[in-house]
Length: 632
Image 1: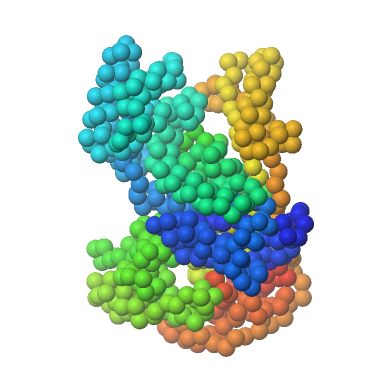
Image 2: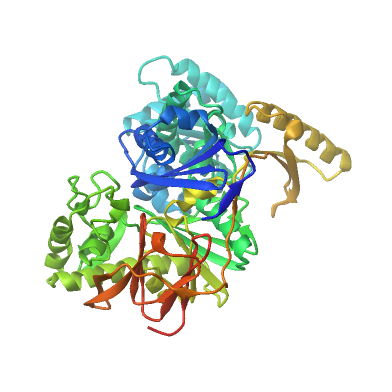
């Protein structure tokens, strides 16, 4: 892929996207891009981080030299889907909730919206305090409530007050509970207060923000501080930057856990925005299929679809978030038989033990196993030839977990697995956004291109784009981010002097905040937005942005075309039968290469089955366009 950055050769930008199954690394050095992947190590995420960096150094220098790579790197930007995957799979701490809202109707709203998520994260671990109690009585009641929540299994507690003076009352209770449960004592329960995260007046949003943050915080904190500490040992030039769902990056110590939710997919959306703008694509629906999830987003008229108040699995929170949904379907999703039907996900085998074909102890049937058993995947070329996969293990898992319970042959089981997997992806796409005549589909992630033609057909889409860096596209997209922070305050009225006072307050907060990022506010871009919400509340928001070096996308479609160079044939299962189809390797193609399906298009880190009636063409940047000429 043709890229360039606004820095001298030798000053590298390193982007890392940590997924549930694989961790992607993209190193940009002038007009060169180096990419690699490594298996995610869930027991210690810093291991796969440094494994990936070491592999990247071998690509760059021809030998492993991690110190040289890190010393020559200007910025390391990192994102993770660990928070997304934890919520999808409901794996995390047991959160308790202590409310003080009287008859505030928002209390029932908390339980009514996102009921399944509430039950998974909170369940019966809810305590309520009487807002009419005096401070001393309230403190005693809170101590009893915290003990009760701990007895119910809570290992983190969220406190959320409603009504006038809520922030002051939460702050008072914090002091009282610190005396009752001093943090230096063993086993003291961590307690998070909603006002410490956001000033949002909306009780439900503010409480949900605190709940999700409490759920995500422990794992994010342990890993990120551990990774940053190890990077310091290599004397990296700048601190590790965490890429967030709002499209900006920040130091670890300046990052709120809830903003890491779906940050990996947002990296893909930043790349998709640059891609769509470069190629003039008006409406680009994207699917980033990894091991655990399919992350779906939309770029329309050069803008990533986002919410002023973001949504976490449909639940509104207080921070702006990109409107990316994460469906529980990926290459490592577990497929099972339930009442005679195949169920796809949301559980995933991840990288440990991984799909059965990895030979790491996994016995569940996944879509990766099915694609291998269909012979779409080649054990000799999978993962660039760096990872061995076992077709017999894959077939055994399919036979035991799918064919036998359904009472069908292995071949029929494979067809039904594929159909169920495609259906779940397509339903997720259609639920996310209307499929219009001008919509194109962007497919990336390691599993995005697999059967994208079939997915597009079922969704009613006739044009598909696969970026040349599809397999690491979210990591690449992180490279379009700057360091940024948002600061907001409520405005009691719309008088000019009130607006001026609010502006000065936020600029002072921005100056302090950006100083902690090592930036003078004078070198930052300040973006101001004054708004009035539906309830009449006025607010002022100032976003401070410190620009960083960015990649730029090159390439063009529409030039002279010539037949793609074949690499032999591959016998695959397609259309309910086995047949020999042409094989094309991306690395062997020249600008303007084109061919029609049925065929297999393969590169080091992804494989795409081109269906009958579809044609691919490849441009000078290595980007691929698939067009549907006729019905298959």
